[in-house]
Image (cartoon, rainbow, N blue to C red; front, side, top):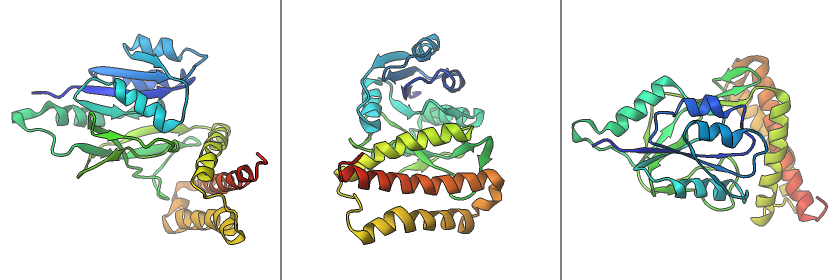
Length: 261
C-alpha cells in the first residue's frame, strides 16, 4: 500500500521563492507551512497551492520546524526549506520509494538527499558544498530537531539511513547582498547559542583559534584541498565570505558574553 507524504515548511516573507518550491511538491498528499509573521504574499501563495498554513512566533529554527513536523498527518514527512526545489528525478525517486510496489516497505526510516547549491548565480560542485546531503525524508514521528539549534541543523534520527540519488536544488544566495544579509542574521542567531553553551572565546587561545585561525584554516581546506577553486570567481567569493561568517559568529559571541552587543 502506498505511503502518504506530508511536506513540512517554515516561512517568513518568502513570496519570491514559494511558487517555484511548492510547484515541485504539488503532488504531495499534504503541505504544511508554518509562518512566523510574513508581511508579503507568503500565506496567499501557500494557500493557493492547497497548503495548510499556521502561525507560530519565531522561537528559533529548531522550535519552528518541530511545530511544522507536529502538524503533519501523513505516513512520511519531507522537511523542505522555502528556497529548495525537488528536481523531476528526485520527485520520481520519492514517489517510487513510497509506492511500496510488490508490498516492499522503504528499507530505511530516513533518507539523506543530495543538495546542489546556487551561490551568486553559479551552481557549486566543489569545496565541500556538493553533495551537500541533508536528512529531510523520514517516517512521521521518527525524527525531530533539538531545541536551541541553528538554521543548518540536522534532524535527530536513531537508526540506519539511506541516501537518495537525485538532487534537491537550493536557490540559496543568487546575489552577494542577499548572502551577506543572511549570514549577518544567521551569525547573530548562532552567536547567542554559542554563549549559552559556554563557547564565548573568553580565553585568548580560544579567541585566536575561533575568531582567527579557524576561519583561515576553513578557507584553505575548502578552497584548496577540497577543490573549491574549480568553481571560479564565484567559488572564491563563497569561500572567502564563508570564512568571514565563521569569524563573525565567534566575534559576536565574544561581544555578547561581555554584554556589549
